[in-house]
Image (tube, rainbow, N blue to C red; front, side, top):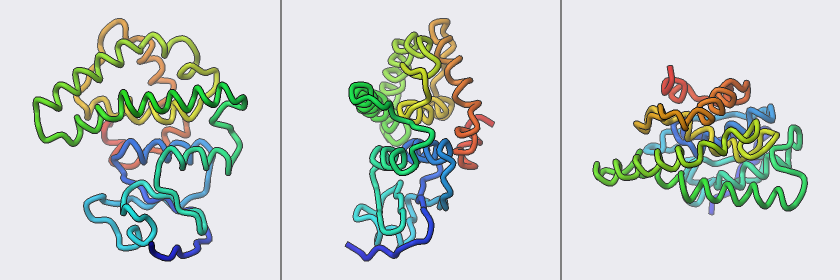
Length: 209
């Protein structure tokens, strides 16, 4: 393991097209954190990254002599380090439910997104695309129950969902069905947030330009 060079400010090594990096950038933007965002080509990472992260992977967050390289841990750290506005519920049961929902997003949606984007087998990619679309349609009514996903307040759960929904065009998924109306209303609300707009990389902006 390499020696971590102490920095005077927070640095976030980010893949400008990854939904995992994007979720952390949303948290940073919502919190108004002063951070140096370094866009990195995952196929050509800087040597410095290997010294910081034993997996030489993205995203990587450096806060002085602390190095984090798992996005969900980064988000919770940032929520504790910068408590306002809070992005996790105060009460233990609600916090546990939020963490469980993030786990389900990871298990049910993120794996399919990664298959669509990185699976060289066209048939497998199309199967994942169909499954993800059907899952969104089945879940769509939940997006209309509260202002945010199963919450009265914007939370880390929304930070995980929003990057996937933003990428629907690049995933080749259209949700024109009537039952998707609550989902479209949710997307309009989330995408209009100043924090979300500020979180977008130039390449991500092009997805819906």
